[in-house]
Image (cartoon, rainbow, N blue to C red; front, side):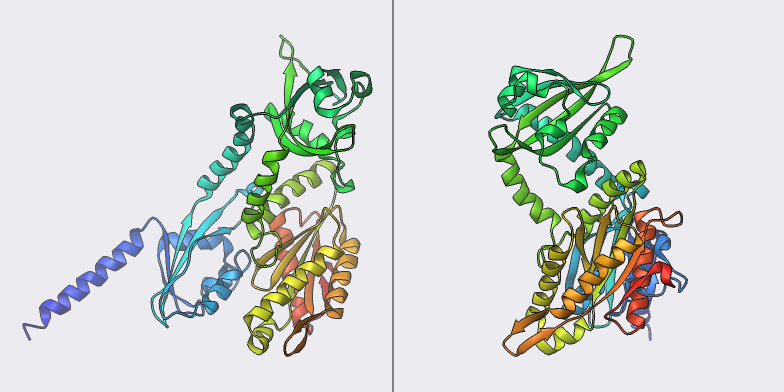
Length: 429
């Protein structure tokens, strides 16, 4: 009897130490089964997850995170090892920067076939710092690296060119007489959807003191080049705002290599669609533009029907081909300014700037019918796929990205409950 008691006391004290560690840990710790059902979590995890808790309560981790990280369940089910790290430092963007910019990192470790441990850490401050550094780095790099060519010019308070230097003529090929009285838009190749980009650039410069942005420009001879353009506010001695100073530099050579890197950081590696994090970055800019100019934005949530059956019947490689085909079809249907992002697994989000509910429904039907009419070839025959779609457009009650995503997601699941291969607009139910 005496030989057993010390061991029992030791186990009990170790268990109490473990509970104390979980309770006091500065990171969120959650213990679940492979389906995500929670049986233990510490106060920090509760604090981090509470903003995402729905009416059903904090019972299943994957369901709680489904609106911001639907891919987690798929990562877990796809992990075939008996134990090990399922994901490490996976970023979850809970809200875009315009709504507080909450970002968590998620690490999931499979202990055995019955237990998963998830570690959640709030890195919002770190991400905000990264964003600020990216903005300033672009211009600091222009100072400390070799400059192919540059131009200096002046703008009136209305954004009209009122001074033109020899360097500006050298960069663009246009003489002073051809430039004075024009705007910067005269020298850039911009799609119709970006007609307001220069007005935004001037607005941001006024608000921040200066602002930098890259443009695809066209030389008078016809050749194109990328220019990094900094617009700084010009003030008189009495601090009265009197116009802008503009400095442009040719960054074509650097742009090519940086675009390759940007694709690695902003695109989904499988489908080529925009990834979730970059989608939030793009959406933040579009919502700022929409609010500034009184424009509308619509969000479409799209989910492949019975996708698990595709993987089970045809194998995961063919399932991957189906996902890639969905993105390819969508890119053929969408406008240049629209964005399709892979949100995780077989779920995609589409952002439609300057689109109301009726216009979004038209695009959604083109997507649905085009995908239904297509097929993916395999050794065993043609694979047919359909999609369910949910739509939501900006309104007084849906003025933020988060609200639009939640509503579009609700409409998507209503479309699935109606039998799939259909479109539901949030305003229709």
